[in-house]
Each structure stands twice: as C-alpha cells, then as structure tokens.
Length: 369
Image (cartoon, rainbow, N blue to C red; front, side, top):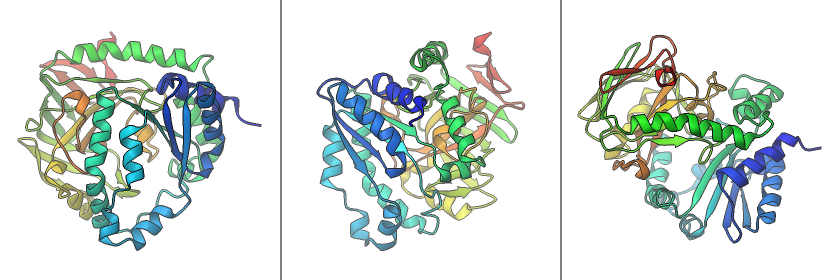
C-alpha cells in the first residue's frame, strides 16, 4: 500500500511546483527505484490533461558511459535530449540514487569534458525557464544510498524527507505558500541592497548585488526548498571564505575548502582533501573561478548535512556560494560548464550586513524581528 504522503507529494509537484496544464508536454526523469512516486505523478499528470513521458535510466549506465565512451562520444549531445530541453513545457527530475559513489573513480577531466559539451544546451534550457517558457523541478525519492550518505536508516531518511517537504502537514501546498509569503519580505528588502558583507569563522567576504534580482525559492524549482539567492556582480567578490562542509562534485568530496577572491576571481584555493579535484574544476573554463550564485538557506526543518545538495543548500542557518554558471533570471552574466555549491555554517557567530546594516546573525534573519 502506497504511503499517502507520496500521493500528497505528487499533488504538490503537479499542482504547485509545475502547475501542469492541459496539453503540456511533460518529461519525468528518474530510475526504477522511484517507481512509486513516478506512478503517482504520471497518474495525476494524465488527469490534468498533460502528455507525460517517462525517461528511466538503468543502474550503472552513467558509470559504463564514462568508463567506455571516447572523447568524441563524451562531447556528443543527443538530438533527442536537445528536442526535449528546448521544446517541452514541464520537466521533473526525481533523485533516487542507487550508488552516490559510482563515479568516484572516473577521472575528473572526463566529467569536465562532458559538462563542457552540455553547457551550451543547459544554458539555453535555463534561459527558457527564466523567460517563463517552461518550468522544471527537482525532487527526491528516499533510497538506501541516499539514507546511507545521510547516516540514517531508510525509515529515518524517508521521515526526514517527508518533514523537509512539509508533507506531514494537513495542507502541504498551503504550507509552501506561507513560506513564499515569509521569504517575499526578504527578497523585497534585498532587491534594494547594493553591497553584501559576510563575516564568520575564517570568512570575510564582500560582494556587490547592485541591480541584481533576488529569487524566492519556495518549492517551485526544487522540492523541498527554502532559500533566497542572487548572482553577484561578476568582478565584485573580494575577500576570503572557509566552507564548513565538504564540497561534493559528482559524488567526490573535497574537504575544508578555502578560497580567496580578488576582483571577482578565485586567486587562491586549498583543501584538506581533494585539492586536485578543486583545482581541476577551477580550471574548467574562464567562468569557473567566478561566483555564479550567493544564497541564504532558510529551511528550519533541515538542520543536518546529508551529502545531498537538494537538501543541504537549504539548511536553515547557512549560506552558500556556487562557483561557475550564474542564473539568467537574476541578471547574472557568468557562464561556465560547472555550477558547484559550497556551504558555510553561520549558526555560531556568523553575520551578514546589507549596505552596512546587520540583517542576519547566528543563522537567523533579523528582518523577522
């Protein structure tokens, strides 16, 4: 018997996150492990008059691809994928990993080559979304692999997911609309700010957001959600930052990352573990050394690092930077084959200043006062 919360999750995804309409061409991407959720979403999509298609990836296909493909094959962009990303109306990607470490032994240069090849298409896809031509959402489905990464049993992890998604509330859609209203206050304030300063342990960072748009992340593109973000002026980031949690890229962990910025570029970088990967990714392309995103996590239901960025970047009391590609809808102009989120814990002594005014302390927005 299906967990009724999965039915509620499907309802939120179909009616709130994606707002499926009659005639929408709709793609669901995942694997067999997410079958219970896929079936619920598929059923609802048909009831709403959409045209759903399911794209399933078998276990180990990605590993086989990276182990076997030639450089020419790594750079090949499927016309089928291109047609979907550029012509379809709604997209749902359900994360349901079999093995989060399956690509650990793949040379980072091969992964970087693949990402560079896909970057122009992904950029066009994101620009479509920013123009309102289509909608997309990423959502989780609890698996043993994701539970193990989070140091939980599968039952514990499933409960964590349901809580983070507000699926234990009587009306999850109403709950997400309340979050939208609360965060709208933050966004309206921040849209009038020119300069952001971040101060925390081993962190003193300054960046300009003048003229940039802040986005209210309220369960539309990510589910669960809970952050506000923008893309800083590309040459404005100055100072240094030490990230509190490992940076994870294609399943590989880089620990204790420290970055120094000058005129918007990373000029010094180190890590206690995985430094070779860090330096390699910084050299992916010209945009990889610049900040594509600055964000504040706001979800109080997510308090623990789970090694899944869908949850971790929303941890209430953290900020994150993403190196690489920026967001078209914020006014960002940086382009890169990577977009790599890194988290800094602000819950013990962290402060954020907006045009010199203290607006955030110890992981909490003072704008709520």
